[in-house]
Image (cartoon, rainbow, N blue to C red; front, side, top):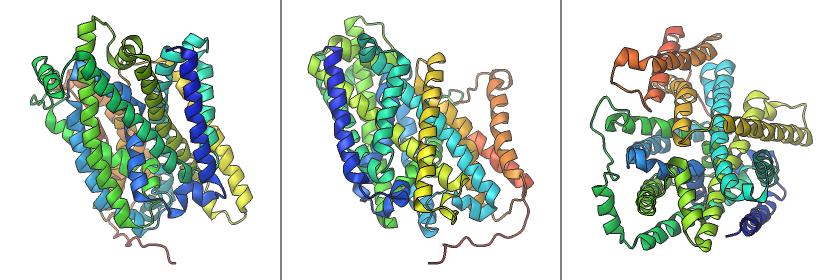
Length: 490
């Protein structure tokens, strides 16, 4: 299909998003932007969060990695399922009891202002790096497959895509993206199912025959039993649970959608339904990755990793499948970026600037500050996407999970310390420990071959980071009994 025609469909899809955003952002205020006035329907939130949780990295990187890691990623998905249950029945009751707009206010009530701002700061760094890495991957694929043929430079493509995202999140925030993410999840899952079905047809295989072929090629292996391997099942399962708890349950972007639901019971249903659907969707992405490997071998293709999916579809499949792929890719791009910019704006305004406590600012002033912060993060996203262009990785999912190990570890350790102990913290201990823990992790990771021989540190880096943070906080803490954290008076 001609690039100009693909671009026309992309613009049409974006016009549909703008129409939804206009409909949902009418009469929106700051509470609409931050938590959707706590009036979101749990089924919409659950379905839309699938797209946010998966993102363009799962769409491109998980299928592309099957050639090198087989189905081992499913170990992480199983661990994440357990982590989602912890979110539903441990974290959400706490957030609802405290009536939080920002989940990091819990840290403030538990340990004071320093902990509150440290938690928010960790989230801002973590989500900014992770979201821009995801955004970069999809922009790169679109650039290489569609936009470069139109003579558009990479920086211009990234700028236009970010402007599109700004247009439909600028006013409505969470109230808007609950609906746009639902629309985009439909687009992404439709692309996944259609591409899988067409590849089965192109290979002239039934699903069962394809599964047998994948097993014969060694691509269907899920569980690894070698303790020294970074893919060892126990490590991956534990890391998957920690990833879900930290990157969803302690992440303002993900939780602001959950706490926008009116009732705790509905928010819990949202998370459990999300957990169940995610298992099936990840399994289908891995199966698709296996089909891509079979097709690439049959066609004598050399593309591998993140480049494989686009190379197969855009180079060998019919025009209508190419269109489905590009629209699904766009659908995978927007949920991770629009939610991230909205959540980062919310956390900065609420946690760092104290926007809701500023009695000297009227609603118009608060809106003006929120707009400026929103624009600032969009500019930062553009700068970081261009920076990722210089450090391109063959498999971005590996890089993103590595970054998460360093950045979300202190957040996991900080929340765990608050919830599992009754000790108190004073002074500058929290930010210092939260900086020292990832620094120690970097030292251990860089020297692991010398110190541990054949043992490989994989995703358990997140758990190690959290444990070091927990230990450091314990050493700096006092023994005073903490006050029971209460919900604010009505």
